[in-house]
Image (cartoon, rainbow, N blue to C red):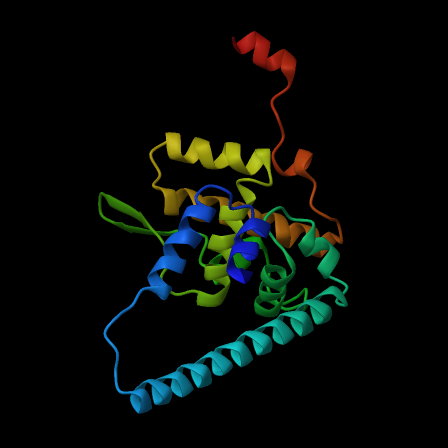
Length: 215
């Protein structure tokens, strides 16, 4: 019943009752049995494993609470949290990886290179290749993927930017990396100037008059 309640709280509706009935039938079905002593030993082992799992879950919850509290107390937290797609833990990860030393990165390009969001261009003779950056902060790059993905449902501008990249031929990962790259530039600017994220500035909409004239 606890799992059923968790699914309902998470917004899952379809198929919950049918799945609960199926699992109930599976776990109450009569199967081949071991000797009573063996079954008792296996039961003790399973109970011990479940207690270990519960302890691990409790520890994870405590770490989440501590990380969230420490992040919220930092003066940069309001600026970082103002970005669509960033929550307490993802914001804390971003802050932990880039730090709060404003002189650490000379410009937005340096931060983008550190995060791995900026591509690398290799030119030789008449050939020119643009590739994703391999040498980067892997933890920051990982949270950047989550950040960009979540922002697609939190920001109309981010969604429009992603859709434009996809229409231009980018694959899903490349389009998200491009969006992450743009966010990193915005974050650098906001932290340097002490300004929160502004959707109207980040993704300006074309003026109505210009749109009509172009049509």
